[in-house]
Image 1 (cartoon, rainbow, N blue to C red):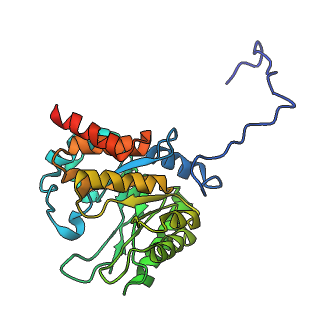
Image 2: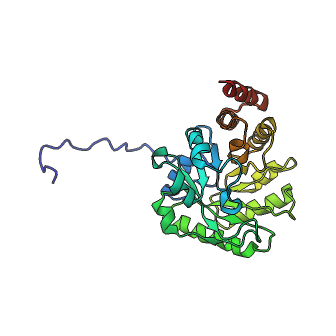
Image 3: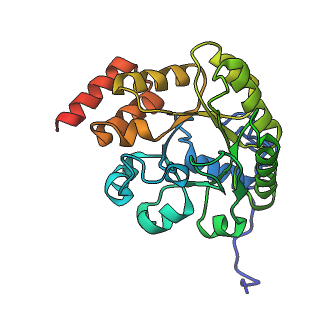
Length: 291
Protein backbone atom coordinates (compact mmCIF):
# COMPACT_ATOMS: atom_id res chain seq x y z
CA UNK A 1 0.00 0.00 0.00
CA UNK A 2 1.04 3.58 -0.56
CA UNK A 3 2.05 5.39 2.57
CA UNK A 4 -0.84 7.21 4.18
CA UNK A 5 1.44 10.05 5.28
CA UNK A 6 4.34 11.95 3.75
CA UNK A 7 3.04 11.98 0.16
CA UNK A 8 3.34 15.10 -1.98
CA UNK A 9 -0.14 16.49 -2.43
CA UNK A 10 -1.41 16.38 -6.00
CA UNK A 11 -1.98 19.89 -7.29
CA UNK A 12 -1.19 20.07 -11.04
CA UNK A 13 -4.72 19.53 -12.28
CA UNK A 14 -4.59 22.04 -15.12
CA UNK A 15 -7.93 23.50 -14.16
CA UNK A 16 -9.24 25.77 -16.86
CA UNK A 17 -7.10 24.16 -19.55
CA UNK A 18 -9.05 22.07 -22.04
CA UNK A 19 -7.56 18.58 -22.52
CA UNK A 20 -5.87 17.87 -25.83
CA UNK A 21 -8.28 15.70 -27.80
CA UNK A 22 -6.46 15.64 -31.10
CA UNK A 23 -7.43 14.07 -34.40
CA UNK A 24 -6.05 10.80 -35.67
CA UNK A 25 -3.88 11.24 -38.74
CA UNK A 26 -5.80 8.83 -41.00
CA UNK A 27 -9.15 9.83 -42.43
CA UNK A 28 -12.26 8.10 -41.19
CA UNK A 29 -10.43 6.65 -38.18
CA UNK A 30 -10.77 9.26 -35.43
CA UNK A 31 -13.71 7.50 -33.77
CA UNK A 32 -12.15 4.04 -33.75
CA UNK A 33 -11.06 2.18 -30.65
CA UNK A 34 -7.60 2.95 -29.24
CA UNK A 35 -6.33 -0.52 -30.13
CA UNK A 36 -7.36 -0.14 -33.77
CA UNK A 37 -5.61 3.22 -34.01
CA UNK A 38 -2.54 1.82 -32.28
CA UNK A 39 -2.25 -0.93 -34.89
CA UNK A 40 -2.90 1.47 -37.77
CA UNK A 41 -0.17 3.69 -36.34
CA UNK A 42 2.25 0.78 -36.71
CA UNK A 43 1.23 0.11 -40.32
CA UNK A 44 1.16 3.74 -41.46
CA UNK A 45 4.00 6.18 -40.78
CA UNK A 46 2.47 8.97 -38.65
CA UNK A 47 4.94 11.51 -40.10
CA UNK A 48 4.17 10.96 -43.78
CA UNK A 49 0.75 9.43 -43.20
CA UNK A 50 1.63 6.71 -45.70
CA UNK A 51 2.81 3.10 -45.79
CA UNK A 52 5.00 0.80 -47.86
CA UNK A 53 3.54 -2.66 -47.43
CA UNK A 54 5.49 -5.62 -48.79
CA UNK A 55 3.10 -8.24 -50.17
CA UNK A 56 4.24 -11.83 -50.59
CA UNK A 57 0.99 -13.72 -50.12
CA UNK A 58 0.81 -14.74 -53.78
CA UNK A 59 1.64 -18.38 -53.08
CA UNK A 60 -1.68 -19.06 -51.40
CA UNK A 61 -3.35 -19.11 -54.81
CA UNK A 62 -0.38 -19.33 -57.22
CA UNK A 63 2.13 -21.65 -55.53
CA UNK A 64 5.88 -20.93 -55.84
CA UNK A 65 5.66 -17.66 -57.76
CA UNK A 66 8.83 -16.37 -59.41
CA UNK A 67 10.76 -14.53 -56.75
CA UNK A 68 9.00 -16.37 -53.94
CA UNK A 69 10.50 -19.81 -54.44
CA UNK A 70 12.53 -19.25 -51.26
CA UNK A 71 11.00 -16.53 -49.15
CA UNK A 72 13.78 -16.86 -46.61
CA UNK A 73 16.26 -15.83 -49.33
CA UNK A 74 14.26 -13.28 -51.30
CA UNK A 75 11.94 -11.56 -48.82
CA UNK A 76 13.72 -11.65 -45.47
CA UNK A 77 16.54 -9.33 -46.69
CA UNK A 78 13.88 -6.76 -47.65
CA UNK A 79 12.04 -6.68 -44.33
CA UNK A 80 14.04 -3.80 -42.86
CA UNK A 81 12.77 -1.49 -45.61
CA UNK A 82 9.06 -2.35 -45.30
CA UNK A 83 6.61 -0.59 -43.00
CA UNK A 84 4.35 -3.64 -42.93
CA UNK A 85 4.34 -7.16 -44.34
CA UNK A 86 1.36 -8.91 -45.93
CA UNK A 87 1.51 -12.69 -46.01
CA UNK A 88 -0.18 -15.93 -44.98
CA UNK A 89 0.15 -17.48 -41.56
CA UNK A 90 1.94 -20.51 -42.99
CA UNK A 91 4.67 -18.45 -44.64
CA UNK A 92 4.98 -16.24 -41.59
CA UNK A 93 5.58 -19.15 -39.26
CA UNK A 94 7.85 -21.08 -41.60
CA UNK A 95 10.06 -18.35 -43.04
CA UNK A 96 9.81 -14.95 -41.30
CA UNK A 97 12.00 -14.33 -38.23
CA UNK A 98 9.87 -13.50 -35.22
CA UNK A 99 12.37 -10.82 -34.22
CA UNK A 100 11.82 -8.84 -37.44
CA UNK A 101 9.40 -6.61 -35.56
CA UNK A 102 7.31 -5.68 -38.59
CA UNK A 103 3.54 -5.25 -38.26
CA UNK A 104 1.57 -7.96 -40.02
CA UNK A 105 -1.36 -7.64 -42.40
CA UNK A 106 -2.49 -11.26 -42.30
CA UNK A 107 -4.01 -12.82 -45.41
CA UNK A 108 -7.15 -13.95 -43.65
CA UNK A 109 -9.17 -15.72 -46.34
CA UNK A 110 -8.40 -18.90 -48.26
CA UNK A 111 -10.05 -21.67 -50.18
CA UNK A 112 -9.37 -21.52 -53.93
CA UNK A 113 -6.45 -21.42 -56.35
CA UNK A 114 -5.77 -20.40 -59.93
CA UNK A 115 -6.75 -23.94 -60.95
CA UNK A 116 -10.38 -23.35 -59.95
CA UNK A 117 -12.81 -20.47 -59.55
CA UNK A 118 -11.16 -17.79 -57.45
CA UNK A 119 -12.76 -16.09 -54.44
CA UNK A 120 -14.80 -19.06 -53.16
CA UNK A 121 -13.18 -18.47 -49.80
CA UNK A 122 -13.58 -18.94 -46.07
CA UNK A 123 -11.97 -17.08 -43.18
CA UNK A 124 -9.19 -18.24 -40.89
CA UNK A 125 -9.70 -18.38 -37.14
CA UNK A 126 -9.53 -15.10 -35.25
CA UNK A 127 -7.70 -16.85 -32.42
CA UNK A 128 -4.76 -17.52 -34.74
CA UNK A 129 -4.64 -13.88 -35.83
CA UNK A 130 -4.49 -12.86 -32.17
CA UNK A 131 -1.70 -15.36 -31.51
CA UNK A 132 0.28 -13.88 -34.40
CA UNK A 133 -0.29 -10.30 -33.15
CA UNK A 134 -1.79 -9.34 -36.49
CA UNK A 135 -2.15 -5.61 -37.08
CA UNK A 136 -4.74 -6.15 -39.82
CA UNK A 137 -7.01 -8.90 -41.15
CA UNK A 138 -7.00 -9.01 -44.95
CA UNK A 139 -9.92 -10.85 -46.59
CA UNK A 140 -10.46 -10.82 -50.34
CA UNK A 141 -13.62 -9.12 -51.59
CA UNK A 142 -14.91 -9.91 -55.09
CA UNK A 143 -17.38 -7.17 -56.01
CA UNK A 144 -19.26 -8.12 -59.16
CA UNK A 145 -18.01 -11.68 -59.22
CA UNK A 146 -19.76 -14.99 -58.73
CA UNK A 147 -18.84 -15.05 -55.04
CA UNK A 148 -19.62 -11.43 -54.26
CA UNK A 149 -22.11 -12.16 -51.46
CA UNK A 150 -19.84 -14.70 -49.80
CA UNK A 151 -16.77 -12.48 -49.86
CA UNK A 152 -18.70 -9.43 -48.61
CA UNK A 153 -20.00 -11.63 -45.79
CA UNK A 154 -16.39 -12.56 -44.99
CA UNK A 155 -15.49 -8.87 -44.88
CA UNK A 156 -18.41 -8.08 -42.60
CA UNK A 157 -17.33 -10.89 -40.27
CA UNK A 158 -13.83 -9.42 -40.14
CA UNK A 159 -15.34 -6.03 -39.30
CA UNK A 160 -17.04 -7.74 -36.36
CA UNK A 161 -13.61 -8.96 -35.26
CA UNK A 162 -12.30 -5.40 -35.61
CA UNK A 163 -15.00 -4.20 -33.24
CA UNK A 164 -14.44 -7.04 -30.77
CA UNK A 165 -10.64 -7.41 -30.81
CA UNK A 166 -9.43 -4.03 -32.15
CA UNK A 167 -7.67 -5.58 -35.15
CA UNK A 168 -8.21 -3.43 -38.28
CA UNK A 169 -9.80 -4.97 -41.38
CA UNK A 170 -8.11 -4.44 -44.75
CA UNK A 171 -10.61 -5.01 -47.53
CA UNK A 172 -8.70 -6.41 -50.52
CA UNK A 173 -10.64 -5.78 -53.72
CA UNK A 174 -10.28 -8.58 -56.27
CA UNK A 175 -10.71 -7.77 -59.94
CA UNK A 176 -11.60 -10.71 -62.15
CA UNK A 177 -10.60 -10.99 -65.79
CA UNK A 178 -14.09 -9.96 -66.88
CA UNK A 179 -14.21 -6.79 -64.75
CA UNK A 180 -12.85 -3.43 -65.81
CA UNK A 181 -10.38 -1.60 -63.60
CA UNK A 182 -11.93 1.80 -64.21
CA UNK A 183 -12.89 4.48 -61.71
CA UNK A 184 -16.55 3.55 -61.77
CA UNK A 185 -15.88 -0.05 -60.76
CA UNK A 186 -13.11 0.77 -58.30
CA UNK A 187 -15.24 3.49 -56.75
CA UNK A 188 -18.04 0.99 -56.23
CA UNK A 189 -15.76 -1.72 -54.84
CA UNK A 190 -13.89 0.50 -52.39
CA UNK A 191 -17.04 2.19 -51.16
CA UNK A 192 -18.76 -1.16 -50.58
CA UNK A 193 -15.75 -2.34 -48.57
CA UNK A 194 -15.80 0.80 -46.42
CA UNK A 195 -19.55 0.72 -45.95
CA UNK A 196 -19.33 -2.88 -44.72
CA UNK A 197 -16.70 -2.04 -42.12
CA UNK A 198 -13.26 -2.13 -43.74
CA UNK A 199 -10.84 0.05 -41.77
CA UNK A 200 -8.78 0.60 -44.91
CA UNK A 201 -8.91 -0.74 -48.45
CA UNK A 202 -6.45 -2.19 -50.95
CA UNK A 203 -7.39 -1.64 -54.58
CA UNK A 204 -5.92 -0.93 -58.00
CA UNK A 205 -4.92 2.38 -59.54
CA UNK A 206 -6.60 3.70 -62.66
CA UNK A 207 -5.32 6.57 -64.81
CA UNK A 208 -8.63 8.38 -65.15
CA UNK A 209 -10.66 9.39 -62.14
CA UNK A 210 -8.66 7.76 -59.37
CA UNK A 211 -8.89 10.93 -57.28
CA UNK A 212 -12.68 10.43 -57.34
CA UNK A 213 -12.24 6.85 -56.09
CA UNK A 214 -10.17 8.15 -53.17
CA UNK A 215 -12.51 11.05 -52.41
CA UNK A 216 -15.60 8.83 -52.28
CA UNK A 217 -13.97 6.24 -50.02
CA UNK A 218 -14.24 7.41 -46.39
CA UNK A 219 -11.25 5.32 -45.22
CA UNK A 220 -7.61 5.18 -46.41
CA UNK A 221 -6.74 3.45 -49.68
CA UNK A 222 -3.51 1.65 -50.49
CA UNK A 223 -2.84 0.48 -54.02
CA UNK A 224 -1.82 -2.94 -55.25
CA UNK A 225 1.29 -3.14 -57.38
CA UNK A 226 -0.27 -5.67 -59.74
CA UNK A 227 1.73 -7.38 -62.46
CA UNK A 228 5.46 -6.81 -62.88
CA UNK A 229 6.29 -3.55 -64.65
CA UNK A 230 9.63 -2.03 -65.62
CA UNK A 231 11.04 -0.24 -62.57
CA UNK A 232 10.46 3.24 -63.98
CA UNK A 233 6.80 2.44 -64.71
CA UNK A 234 6.23 0.96 -61.26
CA UNK A 235 7.64 4.09 -59.63
CA UNK A 236 5.43 6.21 -61.88
CA UNK A 237 2.44 4.12 -60.76
CA UNK A 238 3.28 4.70 -57.10
CA UNK A 239 3.80 8.42 -57.66
CA UNK A 240 0.49 8.89 -59.49
CA UNK A 241 -1.41 6.96 -56.83
CA UNK A 242 0.09 8.91 -53.93
CA UNK A 243 -0.42 12.20 -55.79
CA UNK A 244 -4.08 11.27 -56.26
CA UNK A 245 -4.63 10.64 -52.56
CA UNK A 246 -3.66 7.01 -51.90
CA UNK A 247 -2.03 6.55 -48.51
CA UNK A 248 0.45 3.93 -49.57
CA UNK A 249 1.28 0.92 -51.69
CA UNK A 250 1.07 -2.81 -51.07
CA UNK A 251 3.62 -3.99 -53.62
CA UNK A 252 4.88 -7.48 -54.26
CA UNK A 253 6.02 -8.50 -57.72
CA UNK A 254 7.21 -5.00 -58.63
CA UNK A 255 9.63 -5.30 -55.71
CA UNK A 256 10.69 -8.92 -55.31
CA UNK A 257 10.81 -9.56 -59.08
CA UNK A 258 12.88 -6.42 -59.68
CA UNK A 259 16.46 -6.75 -60.96
CA UNK A 260 17.52 -5.30 -57.60
CA UNK A 261 14.75 -5.73 -55.01
CA UNK A 262 16.62 -3.89 -52.24
CA UNK A 263 17.08 -0.86 -54.44
CA UNK A 264 13.48 -0.99 -55.66
CA UNK A 265 11.85 -1.06 -52.25
CA UNK A 266 13.99 1.89 -51.14
CA UNK A 267 13.06 3.81 -54.29
CA UNK A 268 9.39 3.11 -53.60
CA UNK A 269 9.90 4.41 -50.07
CA UNK A 270 11.33 7.58 -51.55
CA UNK A 271 8.13 8.14 -53.52
CA UNK A 272 5.73 7.17 -50.75
CA UNK A 273 7.37 8.84 -47.74
CA UNK A 274 9.59 11.56 -49.16
CA UNK A 275 7.54 12.76 -52.12
CA UNK A 276 10.20 11.88 -54.67
CA UNK A 277 9.20 12.23 -58.28
CA UNK A 278 9.62 9.15 -60.49
CA UNK A 279 12.84 10.39 -62.10
CA UNK A 280 14.39 11.10 -58.69
CA UNK A 281 13.32 7.71 -57.38
CA UNK A 282 14.70 5.99 -60.47
CA UNK A 283 18.03 7.73 -59.91
CA UNK A 284 18.00 6.50 -56.31
CA UNK A 285 17.27 2.99 -57.58
CA UNK A 286 20.24 3.08 -59.94
CA UNK A 287 22.56 4.45 -57.27
CA UNK A 288 21.67 1.74 -54.77
CA UNK A 289 21.74 -1.00 -57.42
CA UNK A 290 25.30 -0.07 -58.39
CA UNK A 291 26.61 -0.56 -54.85
